[in-house]
Length: 193
Image 1 (cartoon, rainbow, N blue to C red):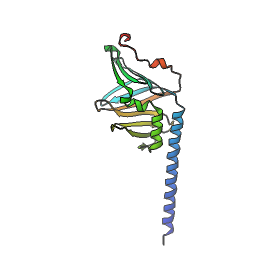
Image 2 (cartoon, rainbow, N blue to C red):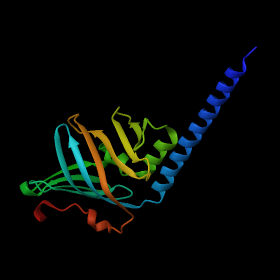
Image 3 (cartoon, rainbow, N blue to C red):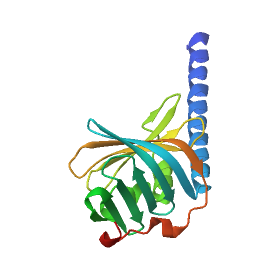
């Protein structure tokens, strides 16, 4: 015969499991709802690649448009026009082009892909400040997407660059749904640098 203490403990454990699953499902649904309402993002960023840190200001317009202006002596700018990602170093009048589909930005700048990830997986990490989801693409590249647990907004991401260096990109001073015209994401020609 099962004693009453064990039954109470088992009942409490079952209630805990059901509550945890419900809270997690609500959290995921609320993050998805917030993403669905998001058309543009403007924010300051701190990017760390290995031991090198860079800062600047970024603008994202879904889907696939991004412009990041770095505060450095090279006057670096990264622009995604939806098809191509350009890394521009104005100081040297150089532009490097990459098809967006070959970069992690293809995943990060398509909120439908992030929503599908949230629907199909559970968070890899959930603490008092962050909720982290992890995506592994067909080439075994790992992308971690961070959300602020309280506001439920995108907080940043972690990927690897072309040289297998860890890239940690953290957002701050986020403004959602400011109007940004598409022309802002136009990649300049080398002559215009």
